[in-house]
Image (cartoon, rainbow, N blue to C red; front, side):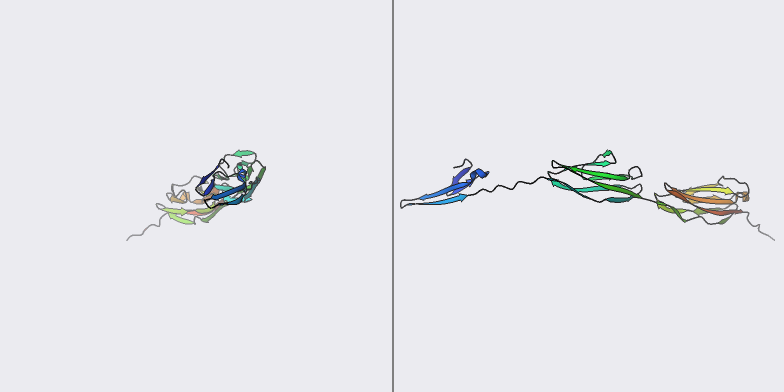
Length: 236
């Protein structure tokens, strides 16, 4: 009887069955009248071996994101044994914790081809994923308007622009009479999108220019600003 077999009443138990337990077993029953024997042929079938397979990678060939946003690159890997995964950007290794990497604040220097490399004892597979960034040059959608300001009063000028990355707004000024580029008395609001001009002197009349700028270009809008003395009021 195999060492891993034990009989409990009329049942034969096997523990940790192996192929060595295959064979012919006889069950014998006796009493005062006689004897009976049954022969049982036990066949132990081994589990089929798990075949080792090389890494297979499925991944997008191109990932598009906006400039200065985060990108997630992922490669789905199968194979046995479970492949290990490494990443490269060009010839430079990228720190990762598995089949997904996150590229933060994407710019021209971090865009381009990323390589996912999967390796096990069968072999190595790799795929390239192209990280592409999209952007928009600035376009002024609400620009300042030509305005007459009475001396002693003020006026708000607005300038808003679309674009990606988000454009910054700057203002410049050139007077008609003095050929000066000094901005008259003013205040800026809402991250520069609103400019308040204060009229102190008619000689300060000139051209006001709003400029929207990002990393990929600029857009300008210019208007005339006239400072005018108030009309005298007649009494009597």
